[in-house]
Amino acid sequence: MLGYILRRLLQVLPVFFGATLLIYFMVFAMPGDPILGLFGDKTPAPQVVEALRAQYHLDQPFIVQYLLYLGGIFQGDLGTTFSGQSVNEVLARTLPVTARLAVMALAIEFVLAIVIGTISAIRKGKLFDNVALVVALLFVALPIFVACFLAQYFLAVQLGWFRPTVGAQNDWGDLILPAIVLGFSLFATSMRLMRGSVIDTLNQDWVRTAYSKGLSRRRVIPVHVLRNSLIPVITNSATNFGVLLVGATVTEGIFNIPGVGNTLYQATIRGEGPTVVSFVTVFVIIYVLVNLVVDLLYGLLDPRIRYVK
Image (tube, rainbow, N blue to C red; front, side, top):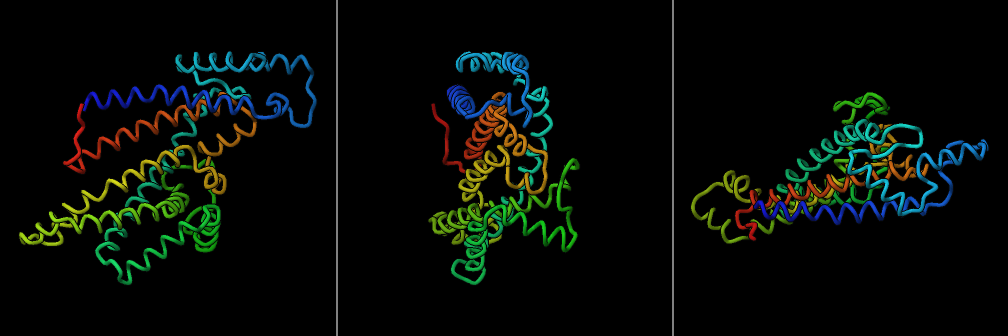
């Protein structure tokens, strides 16, 4: 087990260097001058432009900029935005907001997927199963921005159950509505995976053996069937967590959530290489670690899985 964890952690290194190099190159190759973009329609003095370019090392070749950035990363300095803020401070301010949103959305997705997927599998071909599949298909086809506007209008404006926008107040309770939208938009795929996995597990010989020994459905389904059917759903949820952590940009924009998505979008528009690459670097590391935890959970859920040398 320890050797497996060490090997997975070593895999972070090529992913880290590859992701940062690729993203930094893409930002470096973007058209336009980010320094001139800071002044809008005004024309700054050439001396000011040159001073700012020197301050942010934009007058250096690409490889020099990248190496300087890596040097700061290894010292715990993620760089400075063009507005003079520390990227560390920006990340510390925005990441918790998006993390709260992601955790709430995944909790909603996970519960819906397990409950509806299990019931649909048990009642395969019946009314509940058919309705659940149609609803899941509807949420898969519905664009996220449409779902956001519909939830905003009906649940917030018309019924008044939630605030239409989040803004500076972004505690757990303030993020319920956008989390519901994201959770429902994600649950369809996980529900179908859960349904298929439960159906496959119910057809296994050892499940029929459990029934033949006199075990009730209340014992077999939650203890034996669900435990062995969760792996596809957990894998999909881990992928969704990585996507949400990068920032549900559309949802954060519509609900005015000061999270990672909005910040990353604005930094991309302004061509702030250090901000974009630093955010992506942190996300890559978190994503790899989340998938490592998920891989370790496989052994707990399915005793047949063993980590060998």
